Amino acid sequence: MTISVASGKGGTGKTLVATSLALSLKDKGRVQLLDCDVEEPNAHVFLKPSLTKCESVYIPIPKVDEQKCTYCGKCSEVCAYNAIAVMRKTVLVFPELCHGCGACSYLCPERAISEEGKEVGVLELGHADGIRFAHGRLNVGQAMAPPVIKINLAPMGFSSKKKPTF
Image (cartoon, rainbow, N blue to C red; front, side, top):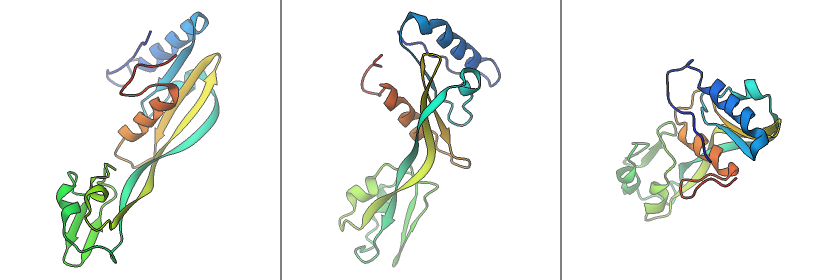
């Protein structure tokens, strides 16, 4: 069984309900709690988990090798987020706009674009009183929470392509 507590105005008690449910069900089977509010996770305040693993979350950001680049502009054309601008003999990359889709490096005819990771947050895993626990923390100033939320679910057996495994 999967129970999700989602949506609602801040301060309505979503985290209190979720943590209370997890604690009330822990003796009835395997229980996992995923705090996907990566901008301000606070389930740990109620559960006080023992965190056993911490991993950085990265998104791929384009890096242009101007020795190979012919300034054809294909990377700029394919970028839906306007994170790359090609001018005469210069390529500008705007990491804060990049969503890490990889289209620019994939479509570059000269293979002049590689990708380097930009840390956007961390994932912390652990357990609390018989409950498997995970939460992500988005780095301060980062605008894109989805990469941290997505990686938050994967280690716990969740994916967008399959049902959760318990």
